[in-house]
Amino acid sequence: MLEQLKRLQSGIEGLDALLKGGLIAGSSYIVQGRPGSGKTILANQIAFNHVRNGGRVLVATLLSESHERLFQFLSTLRFFDPSRVGNEIQFVSAFDTLENEGLDEVVKLLRREISRQKATVLIVDGLLNARSKADNQIDTKKFISELQGHAAFAGCTVLFLTSSRLDDGSPEHTMVDGVIEMGEELHGTRSVRRIQLRKTRGSGALSGLHECEITDDGLVVHPRLESLYSRPSQQDSADLTRIPSGIDSLDTLVEGGLPASSVTLVMGPSGIGKTSLGLSFLAKATPAEPALLFGFYETPQRLRLKARSMGIDLQALEDSGTAHIVWQPTTEGLLDGLGARLLKAVEKHGSKRVLIDSLGGMARVASSPARLNEFFSALMSELRGRGVTVFATWEMRDLFGSEILSPAPELSSIVDNLLLMRFVEMNSELKRVLSILKMRDSFYDPALFEVVISQNGIALNKAFKHATAVLSGTATPAPDA
Image 1 (spheres, rainbow, N blue to C red):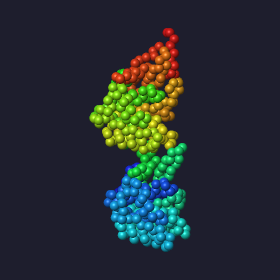
Image 2 (image 1 turned 90 degrees about the horizontal axis):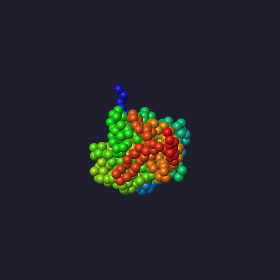
Image 3 (image 1 turned 180 degrees about the vertical axis):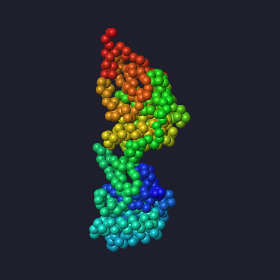
Image 4 (image 1 turned 120 degrees about the vertical axis):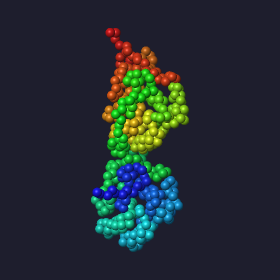
């Protein structure tokens, strides 16, 4: 029976997810990327996380930059612990040795330090300098091979950092077990950092480009949600239990309520009442099955005021732990980061009802709109698998008009239930109209209903029996039979 490969966790949650458990202990990796891409932060974050778990780290630099300057930069990040420096983490400059004595002496220096420090992680910063000192590719391979050999014998995992974008056929790539590439792209005026595993010998990995960011906590990696949850982490329930939508008149139209663990999307223009429907859904939460409001456009205080105008005491629901609000602006953020934040909040609070207000708020931060369908499909499938009933909104651009634009090309893979809201002018009055376009595994009334929002909540009244072209926005009287 084959022995399971021992993993060395990086302590960077998203990176360990990409590596399917962490770095392979005793292996060697190249971390490459242009200056400023985050290589040094990633390596030092791994180092400080490693010593917190009882390991020892040797950081060797082949660059002329002083360690004091490095410490100044790292001191702004929370993972940096100066008390570890000189004890569990040793910093050694091999620049002068490289310049004056060559690669062979650098290898001897590092071999001595690995043994003396009993290092279990070795970080070599400045592989490009070592390459420039090599007379040929054989010398570069020999340098890496000798360091790898001694490190592996000592049970030490090696990270080589380089600002050069090495190609797959370079001598460095052929010698190491893994290649982690970091980069940065401009999308309009916004800069997005990305990370990619170019090579992972002997181990599975989540391939492709993944978003990351540098925060006060250090590097945060957000794996693409559709790769992380290509299959839901839990089995979707086959239970067709009905749960109250929060609008009694709607429940009578759909066999008693919304199917549990389903996804309902309400589409409509600004001001039509989408959030109000969502708040009614939220208000039916209980302490045993709490709710989560994941919002973008309206701040928590404005949501509380809106709920109060409908007779819903959202503040009381929050105080009792029945409801929780997670709010974020749409000006910044990463799509996969938002997805991860939502799932963590659901797990933290045990949420069984989730209002996402709105999907458009999440879509605004997407650097690649082409993957929105896959992202939303994976997110909703994972929420269904966790037994969560989702109520989401999507703002349509036009207040009036017969054209209805779908938020995604394959909507059926994302939502189970679809509600459409429009404004309609009738008898010189502006009315709200709601129609049920789809209700999976349910019978429903396909009629058009007027939406009435008052201090007592929301009611749906059957209307427009004697009018045509209602959804165009301008109703006309139906001809007499």
